[in-house]
Length: 73
Image 1 (tube, rainbow, N blue to C red):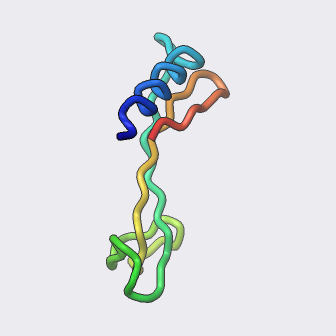
Image 2: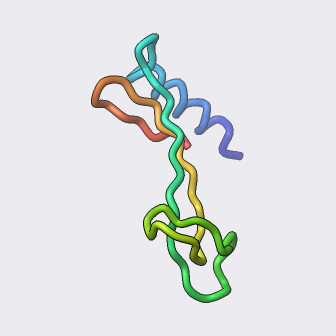
């Protein structure tokens, strides 16, 4: 169960870079893939390529303040 570790990560991220001037950054990244064995691969828009291709899309969540980012998910 990763819940205690995730809770501690969020508490530490909030302590380090939280506050009224902090922002939550949600970003997606496409990874072009070839083959048929990777989970979640489908023909979809790949921003890295600028067109539709077989790729996986990853979503990241980052808490940031000023120039200090902390990845939280």
